[in-house]
Length: 495
Image (cartoon, rainbow, N blue to C red; front, top):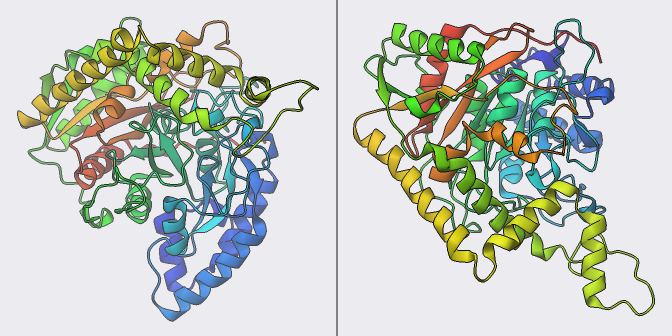
């Protein structure tokens, strides 16, 4: 079999079980593709020795007949996950040289399931960004191009390296994290599937923290079935994470029947934004029609506090970030600035952070410190927390009325060019999260499914939002949507 790196997880798993291919062959195919794709800047720490060692061990396990679904499958790990003995920098200069002595729970679970780590993937610094332009490693680049235009496009953020690597077939799947849309927005931009599970479904232990009440890990894969396979391996209770849910993990793949007859799908009127491109409006309407044709009932719903979601998010997330990032001080780990004679501890903190943190991280830390400061705490942070409760209640009311899932656009546009959204107006960049942040604020599961192309030939995604802890049901609805949309487009190889 040639082009083994182009397989999805399910196909590769079945080929491994039949003996048609070995994990070593799969892994070598991916490592070759990675070495030829430096132009995408997706993999930032390559680990071929670890990969081949794990692939050989996986082949032995498969031979012995006790292999779980992920065994022998080569994947990429976002640089936000701590991986033992391998640089784990969260794409920040302040963590340069940091090689953890421990493994994050999620990457450990994947390793225990026999998955093969190919290396660490590019991302926005500390997961703060929507375009992968804040990384200390430089921009990750999308494998997609607009028509015959050579302009480099963003693969989205913060999980841009993961998105680019999966779309370009450098790995079979990848881990991502989602604090305000960082799995779903990049997945939509590059035409792959990305699911953010319910908050607490995947352990956050060993994942570098951005905003602890919002962060959640999830898989980025080539299709919905692959998302179900990988998500099952990533989930589970972890005593080391106090927010981890003690719930049984179902066999998500077994729940993919594609039968959604009688399901109620809500269409929220508040997501009809002014200035939304007509292509996205049209795709959304088509998505609703596809689900209707599959037997679902489409109902109009209202989520009245949606308009406050972005401002609430951009108070809560920076507040938690400023608290979480206080540990990077030049003492405990990572970078320490060179000090002049006579410099004290204050100068050490100031110089270390000025050198180690990029502009976007500095901006968010300052916003966060401001909203938590005396005199502003009630006016901003506590008010944002109250708004968050109202947003969560909007969803609870809709689900209580019998709605099974909610259909929305995933992003307000197709992928834009690198450098097109300048630092001069960061708020423009923040608007990319308009359809995704509500899901994080409410702690719900959400999935982005590729559903069409815009007039320039770029992918567009639709988002489905599910009931808490019902990822299996959500994946099944997404599976029905995927089958109806029939999206098979791939980027033409230019790198």
